[in-house]
Image (tube, rainbow, N blue to C red):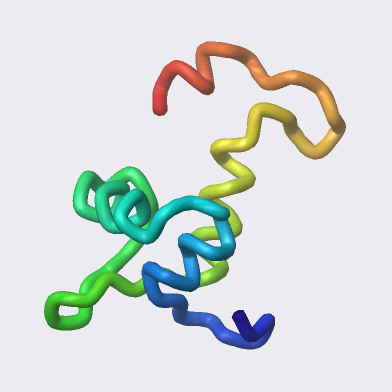
Length: 74
């Protein structure tokens, strides 16, 4: 995957997250991952995926464990 690429396919997001492409499609359909459709194809903005990863992270930037109540909202 090109580092300069701003719009990603489901396959590229799957590779980036090390999960199956069907899992990416499922999360997109359910609104659990930031995505948009072009026709029948899902697309993802890399900056939104990176922000989503940070928001879902168990650890904050200081290395301290996040409050469990934050994790329970997902």
